[in-house]
Image (tube, rainbow, N blue to C red):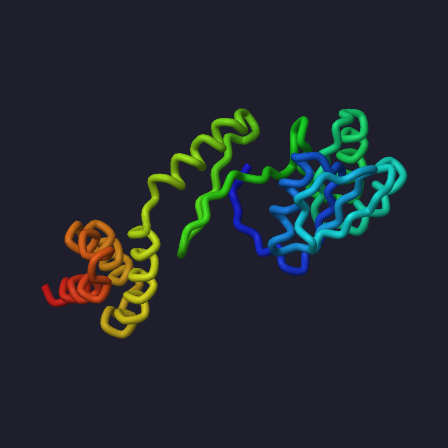
Amino acid sequence: MLPLFVDMTAKKVVVFGAGPVGLRKANFFAREAEVVIVARSFIDGLDPKIRMVKADVRAEMEMWIEWADLVVAATDDREINDRIVIEAEKRGRLCNRADGISTFLIPSVVEKDGYVVAISTLGRSPGMAKYLRLKLERELGTRYGLMVCLQEELRELVRERLASSSERERFLWSVLQDEEVWTLLEKEYGRARDVALARLEE
């Protein structure tokens, strides 16, 4: 499997099953996509943007799989999940299932100012993926987001001063390796930028 970041705006996702796993996956996609969740009953905590369809999954699956771009099988019935996967494959839809092999995976995500880190164990250990997410959330401090901002700013500032893309890449990488810049970032962002730009004259 290859990791990708995909713009889900204007995409449609159907989630079958509204237990804790279905809820988590539906809420994940609802941040960008149009999401429908199909189940006999629902637990609290669904994003209000999600459309809830109270129905027997077996009676509704074909219609909603045809409608969707992505399919999530998260019922507590393995046989029903099998049927969802088969119907998704017939229609060429990517399908994530909670209890077996999927054609796409939903990672654990660390979101910080300026960057996102996605973590997956390729389905082998969801607990380890969660452990790594919590560890990174604790250890990735504010300076990393500040460095993203600085790198973005420097890319624009040096575009005309350094003619080739390879020169710009080398300069930006040298800033990433500059301990003085890192030390200054959280204290004096402007000074960190000045020190980085001064390296161009050396």
